[in-house]
Image 1 (cartoon, rainbow, N blue to C red):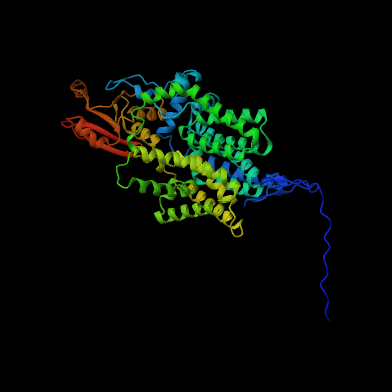
Image 2 (image 1 turned 60 degrees about the vertical axis):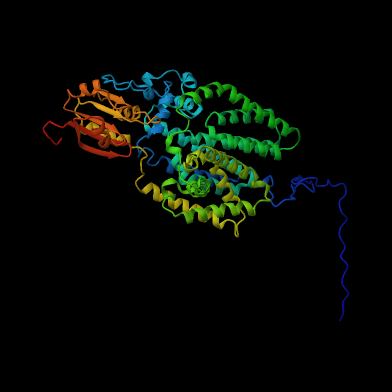
Length: 555
């Protein structure tokens, strides 16, 4: 039997509803909050950014695991050259090892890494000419050393603290942009990323740099969502100035964040935020500009030899190094070096595909600007100076949170599956790294132990290096740091010895030469002496130089 179709009767529309004028307009249909999106970004409601007690418990577990991975074997390796420089600069006496008198045998033992010889902390601002960093980290490190001392565990614990604080800020930032579940995944990736663990176990400025960068982003996002109150604007200016005074490569992040604020903060708030960016730039330039100009004149060329590259096809090399960055951020320098270039390119292609597929998602716009601003600024320097700065991961490590946020917030098929796989792999990598021997960059502890075990108390130590960038005093401060009670005579040598010095050394049966390749340099520098005992360490070589006409003996 035929039944005619029924006519549907719709309820009358509610009148006086506000029209959606822009993406993200709130429509009070009822007491629930509704967001109208005209782009392809996910809907983030007020309820979805408030973590539950269970989610806070998960975040606590993530932080506990992150703390364990950063504390475990924190002092397994020796402090290397850059960490010794950090302590030395924090003492307010500039890099004193660069100014040791050359070719002078000394019997005193100055200790530029000790608080007993340190200047007041406010002297640090004017004593960082022989380095390529602004002074803020060294000031903060000095305050930390005043409270906890200058031993390896103490100075490295400051980096661990900033690394853990950065994870908390990263979670809060991702929570505001993407919601709580992607924020938990992002925090977990940062907690387990081997690249983050590596920098957290060094007395360097990079964990502080990431912390300040993320807090600056967090302030801008809060202003975008909740308005530009005087307190938020003040905090934003403080964090931006601190960011610029921590590392020079933060300029790319500063520009990227300013572009985001100019395009995403609406109305009068946009003018206020841009005014804060301008004040921050002017304030940082006024506070540090004169010292920066002095630094430009005093640092040798500001272009060390180890960053120069003479290979052809430099543009292609830059592209290949850029493709290495995602794997290095997640797996660390040492582990990622074991993979072929094909794996590096595949990982980089996956990240680029994520960005292109999500180009209409406004919630990823901040991360795109942030990462590109940092990486492109270093790429520009490499292209202009024919250098390899992009190969040194820590110079672009500030861009790593952008990669982690994109991985956590991407719309995968069954979106939660791939982030969980990434977390599992990062956990496995972290366990493999921590269960294996951690390679030391420069093992001054091993070098000092060799000297203390084989050198007699009255034998001369000669620290030699002819490089204009690394002074031979670096070996002395590493030796003095790990053997503060040693009383052996010593001297530093930058150039081949003079006839007067050679004549003075002829009165000695033997002396110890410490440097990059002392067994090779020794016979050329000191005629009449031959290398007898040689040890090679990651910090350099140790060689006993004995008179050629003396009786042979094994020590």
